[in-house]
Length: 112
Image 1 (cartoon, rainbow, N blue to C red):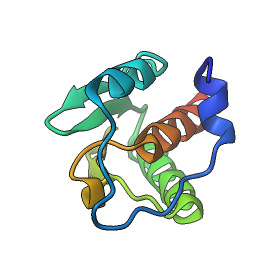
Image 2: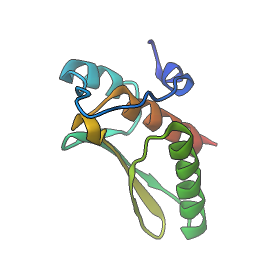
Image 3: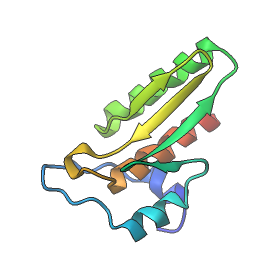
Image 4: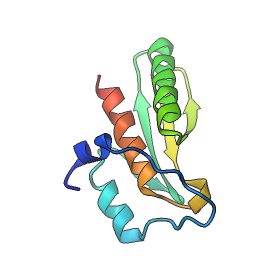
């Protein structure tokens, strides 16, 4: 995998209990492909700014659509003109490739 475009073309894989989290070096490599995302505890997060509440909620609905299609769901913190997106794979108790796939797809939505 060479860049973020590769992540956006991938699909999430189902995770079961006992799925191991990514090694720290692999998580760091994948994180380096994403702009503006940062480690937060065992997960990754990014704050997306918007002009107003309507644009914020439109983004939240678009993220919900991606989450449904990928069957991988972030924690969202929504304010008037911003949304914080946090990914972690609970079954792995850490990061998996699914978190980075979804982060890349959320970034692609924001760029529209």
